[in-house]
Length: 376
Image (cartoon, rainbow, N blue to C red):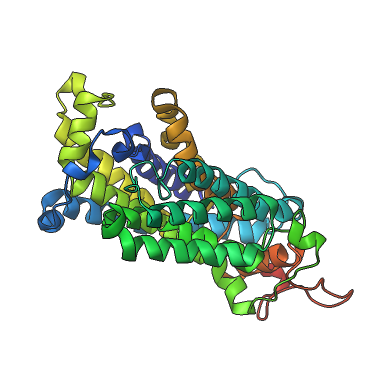
């Protein structure tokens, strides 16, 4: 890559990812720490307001710039050092040794908040507090049982389907248990995790493996597991930016004024409202970048900063709530590139190490159809 291209590449990264780290509050869930979150309503009339338009334009520009930067990176790495396709220069073959642990780690990251919220009559998150009733108790019990199944790795495929069913039940039964379905949409990433675990199972370190319970998913499902995980997570962040900030600025303003003031720009005249809009735009942009699949490892590493800035102030509730997202970040960080042929190879390698696809026979190509050796 020429020197000028490297300079442009660096400037693009500074511009885009610097924006992501401007506001740590972008990763905080204000509704978790507001006494009566249901008193703040999402205003769909703001969909055509200037902050939403700015979020769309800025994220669109970031999408194009990071896609270009990713293409430059792919040319530099894949054309010259195909064996070291990551920022740290680690050989992919060495990273693949971690693949067998990924389903287990992701399941643990999900199970902890399921247990915590299930014990407290909450569906998936602190702001989704259910009104006491037999129906709410049944949903909490289902949440608890799914968490146990994921921890032990017993009947993981059924637990994953149960999680999707529980999510759907929350959307349908929300009005009967005191939950606004629109707030449940912020947790769409749960569907992505459930699909991932349904496809790959809990891996070799599980009760399922001990009992030799092996599912044989459609090979197309293996190809789509990682994109579904990325897309649902990106959409969750976009929806969160809308429902807690861009379409519900009063909620974020109340949080900043009455809970913890994260407005670092207050000393230079930035109002809480403007800071709320900026935080929403940052969160919206990061969701779009995650969906784009460009430079996934770099996106995850940079995003880790704002996702952790609020932890010392918001404590274990924030930590437990963010654990599933941390698990997703770990999976994307290890699996890395989203270029189709490379991503498919990683997915099929993970499927074999997880024990859901048979190991390749000696001398037989382990690459997905159409994948040439120089493309890995």
